[in-house]
Image (cartoon, rainbow, N blue to C red):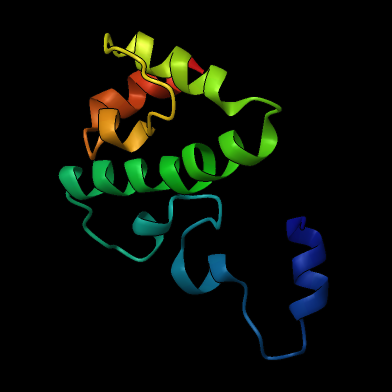
Length: 106
């Protein structure tokens, strides 16, 4: 929404825009808008969890005709031996850097 549109909607209503209230743009990162300190290890852990939730456990099994081909490609990129029925979590675990390698392999 443009700033002019926001002003038109909120003028006279007693409501103020987020930018007026906080002095920060809504496009800034969530943790910056609310002054939340995010530990790097926690950020890495959350990234790995999001990769599992959105890609490894959702897109791969449901969005591909043969997900085993993608699993084999990822496991090979990690330098491990692929065995039929292998689960990516057994090879990636919670390792942030292995997760990045796996995503890059896709």
